[in-house]
Image (cartoon, rainbow, N blue to C red; front, side, top):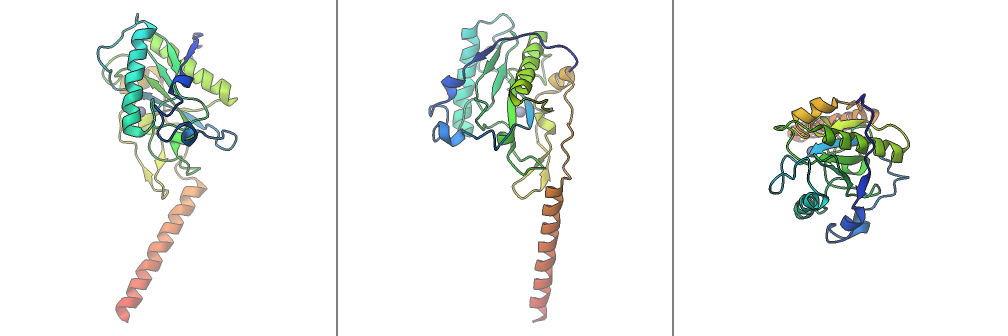
Length: 231
Ligand SMILES: [Zn+2]
């Protein structure tokens, strides 16, 4: 990302979606103390489609908000929170904030390999509305996404790595590494923004210690089984 972001004013819809209609169990269930849970990365997504006819590059705010509301209802039903992202960017170049910085959401499964904490807690989800495995991302959409990344850096007070969803290094609750099984945010968007795998390694001391513990447990189980067999 070498292009200077075009100044884009973020449209703030976070109050609209910060209520139990869009949050299972109510807002407190999704609210975090960011002093204890700082944001460590931005994860880039696409919606992989539209809720009806695509609104296009010259769409009105009203037309785009129909798609945001539809996404919010869909995610609330499927994941308990809608929208599952913090930011949504459109082909028009508009950028909407839809999730408060101090909330965890539902955009990426698994955990950060080094901290063992859920990515949904430790990453901000930025999403491009549309299917960018199939379609070429319009320039204004890219501007809106870059503006979102810049806003995240401003709020965090330091540069944050931007990671394409499909290559987010992840471990499960037991510390076992796994691959994100998704093409999200689409090959064309990944190419356009040159988002690559960041320097978040999957061989952190925490992961190594968990691996050692698992090996030791299986050795003990094997020895116990052997002793049982020998009477
Ligand atoms: Zn995604």
